[in-house]
Length: 258
Image 1 (cartoon, one colour):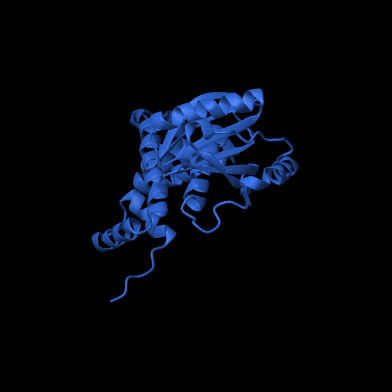
Image 2 (cartoon, rainbow, N blue to C red; image 1 turned 60 degrees about the vertical axis):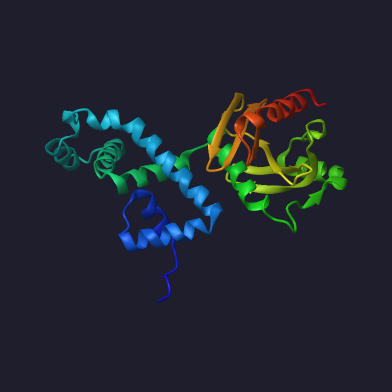
């Protein structure tokens, strides 16, 4: 019997532990053969745990009298303002447990900006383009002038293309990518063993100046930071401590223009 296609609802149900045993096994097998999706689902699970850790102390507090059922009914009769509807919805979602956690998770992800969004975009770019052996970049390294002009036109800022050759990594080239916060420039590097790195840079909507910080999603780790309104994120399938000196080199070059 053929297995029913795995849907996004199945993936979300897998994160929440809401699937029956048969479907959970089917999703597990699917994720083993789709590592890029498995990495995304793994990050959802970790973010769900993080969100629970933040909200658990609130959940253990007594419900404020202004949010008890009789008070809310009375407020509804008096056409309470939108704030109370939002507060009541938050209480219901928190009490709902797993599925409520997923809904709050979605709200958290959709509203994320700044460094969290930049890191996610860099990891997504790596997952999409690093495995591509046919056309990982749109413009190759011998077209850097055209790449810089393209990026300058789209981002409104002239980018620096860092040189990592002293660390054994060559610039393969790059491409412009679309993010929910505007256009970004993705650069790809590789070394003699074929190890690939991705650097994403774009103007920042939030967190316009932030110190360098590590992050990880599945097997992909990286460092992200922001300076002068531009964000930078270097990611790869390497330990964060291996990437750190490369990120420091990039930061130095982008800040000095050399």
